[in-house]
Length: 162
Image (cartoon, rainbow, N blue to C red; front, side):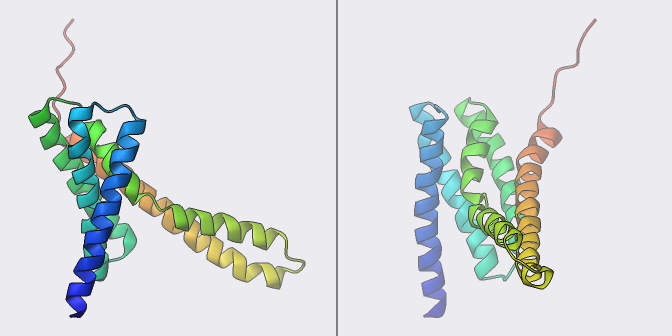
């Protein structure tokens, strides 16, 4: 029963992330015929990350790197099939992976530390802020590497001729 509950939560995550990806795709003026692909890829990415974290107990940073690499490869496949640029799919699909809560918590704790009267009072807030800032940085770096690496490895540029 516990496993069914986890998959139910992952299904809800899939749907919500698909809506977020489609919303950002609309914001970025993606053509209407490509919105479903953006939504499905975003839902898949967030659901897969949730699956890796909840079932396999993988850390957030590693799960994000793996999923963003998969999104980057699938974006290349969708780009060829649907005759559109790959970043349309990859960027919209990676938006739900951005760690907004971690960044917010880091900034709030930095502000709390700055308002403390003593160094001892600020130390607890600073340690939480630095940990969240480091996690945010690692997750954003993972997204960047995952989106860029497949294109750098598999998209062949035409050589410049003199």
